[in-house]
Length: 177
Image 1 (cartoon, one colour):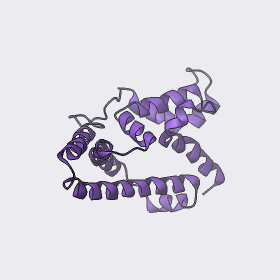
Image 2 (cartoon, helix red, strand yellow; image 1 turned 90 degrees about the horizontal axis):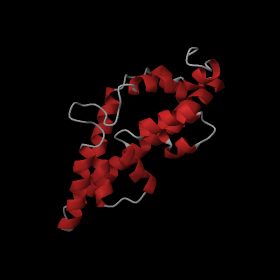
Image 3 (tube, one colour; image 1 turned 45 degrees about the horizontal axis):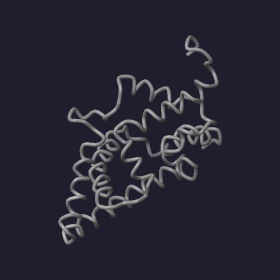
């Protein structure tokens, strides 16, 4: 893959996975606002839990419930041709995607093991877990299968976000955009 493509993908994708990117002043304000919007949808509580890194029964339940929605979202994404995936191997973005995939697998293993063990624990601990799982199952998507917290302009905002370096370089006014 070309170095420029790798740099572009890192510049665009990596801030989405970093909860601290909304404070990164090297990013344009409108880009940080877009990231903040995406982080403010149904995933906000989940990002807060991940940021704390303190996983008790409730937090693990929240991850367990949310994992179902995350899997559904990932499955619904358009499939990427293997030749494009091969080009990402060894790049920063490719490594980041591998890390994310590895973390999701770790979370699933953690959840499976925890679900086996929680029934042997106290009713109080199991109750916390089940409360978190129940909230996680309702955290990201609503009853109409829409992402919670998304606005009408979320799709347009996502489109602009994914080309923000081009927009930032070529458009200085709304009229130019």
